[in-house]
Image (cartoon, rainbow, N blue to C red; front, side, top):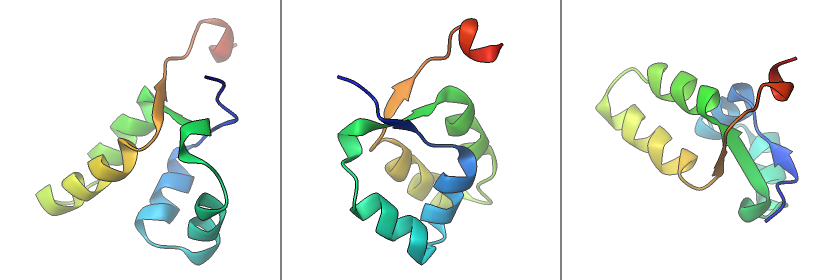
Length: 75
């Protein structure tokens, strides 16, 4: 499966805050074509203030394909 876009932490935060342009964008795209990196996962979970927020963030993050970066991605 080809990933069309890798979402960064700021997009995930906008989605968690129900920022209308981010929610609209997500609704107009297919989840199976979107991914996140392990860095985005960790930053999002780390930023949660409590268990409720952590659980909510985890539910959102699990909707996306987890992509592992390579050495070339970091250059």
